[in-house]
Structure formats: structure tokens, C-alpha cells
Length: 350
Image (cartoon, rainbow, N blue to C red):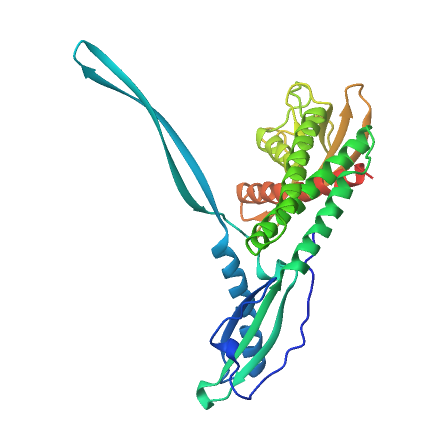
């Protein structure tokens, strides 16, 4: 996970003559400035925090205002005109430039090189006002984004092995890298508007596309599934929960011929899981409510029947009727399943 660079500026309150930056935002090569304002008639500490936050937001706002892309649309058309003695055909083309704003999700706290230079407190009794001047140092921002890119590139350059554990580990590495690269593209989209090196943005995008291609190859090269079996009935709702949990981890899924089959067993039975028939959970009853509780094990089995590690998922539901308790138990099971599968696969990939 990418961690933002934390810059803690030394803030100074000024009560002297009003500085020029309060009314005119400074312009300085390599920096993007923003001025934040907050009322200071109550808590000065709160006003200081609000003004600095607003100043950083203004820098972000200025960057976003500059993030635009121009798309050239070329329309080819053919026009036929009736003339004496026949039909004349004419061809032409028309180009149109369309301005579209790129959606940038980065927050001010994510921008490396963003700091507060100084503050000013205007003392006017009930109308006291706090001002803050923030700026983005483009050299620092560009350097930090490049350093983060190099860390991600290095992680993708490691060898994970071709065995089961190696391929699972590689899938997790690629998943984390893609999340990080998405954040980096977002950050670069902002700092490029301030003059960052375009080659860095191209390198980030190129690495993301390569990682996406590898993710697709891994999905097809290592598939999981729960093939239908008359001896192991599985409720569709339970199966869908398992499938979604694996897909969220970036893994492939195949219902017919998976590389690794997932077998579900209850603690008290070995003939699979069927919610509509014999339940894999039991009940604890009293005069006021019913507790439904059950435990399932998930086991990976390869094409040769070899079993790998298993993991357990325990679920519970409390209600005034069996139906309500069952519904809440299945909801609890689905919520826990995603977390359990993620931790289980992490252990398998070690």
C-alpha cells in the first residue's frame, strides 16, 4: 500500500501588517500556491486547522482546474447529389475538438510536496480571520511519485515461482501493485497539470497495462471452482459467495474444469452443504430467541485428488424465528467468507 509523504510545516501566527499573499495568490516557478481562510472568533487552534486544510484544498482545486484533455473527433461522411444525367458523389471529413475534464480522486493529504508556508491572523474582534498559505513543490512531488513508482516496479520484478504457492503469491503481488499504480496515475494526473515530467506518467501507465495483462494471464492459468457433483450438493447462494470471494482476490474461476476444486464440508457431516435440505448449522433455543450456529471448512483439491490446507468459517444468526436466524446466519457467513478467503490465500502463498 502506498503511504503519503507526511510534511509537518512550522506554522507561525502573524498579527502584523496584512501580507500581500492574503489578497493575491503568489506565482513562483515550480510551485502551485493556494490561500485558505477560516473565521477565528472562537477557538484559534480550530481556525488554524481549518485555514491550513482550506489552503491545501485550494492548491488541489487549482490543479484540478488545469486537468483537461482534448479529444479530436473525425467524422467521415458521404453526400450524394442528384444532377442532370446521374448522381454525383462527394466525400468530406469534419474534425471537432471536445474538451473533457478528467476525473481525479486524489485528496490533498495524498499529495507529496504539499505543505503550508506561513499563516496570518487578522485581529478584528468578532471578525477575526485566520489565513494560511500552502504550496505544492513540484520537484518534491515529482521525485516522490517517481520513488513510489520504482518501488512498485521492483515488486513486479520479483520472481514468485511456478508452483501453486508461487502463483497464488504472484496473484497477490499483482493485485497490490495494480491498486498502487491506480493511485499513482491519479496523483500524476494532478502533478502533471502543474508541470511534472510527462515521461513519468507514461511509465506508470505502461507498467499498469503490463500488470493488467499479467493479471489476466494468471486468472486463466490458475483457476478455482466448485464443479457440480451428485455426492457433494452445494447451495447456489453459498457457491456464489465463495466464487465472489475468490474473484475479489483477483483469481480465476471455472465451474467445469478448474485447476483446484473447492470442497465445502460441515463440521458434523462430510456430504457437502445444501441450505435447502439438511442444514450445516444447528440451533440453540430459549423462550425469547433462537441462535443458529454452524461451521464450514473449505479445502482445496487438485486434479489428482491431493488436498491442500483447509480453513474454517463459523457463522451465527440470532432471531425470533428459525427463518430470521437462518437469514442472519447466511449474512454473517458471507461477510466472514471474503475476509477468511483473503487470509487463507495469503497463508497458501507464503
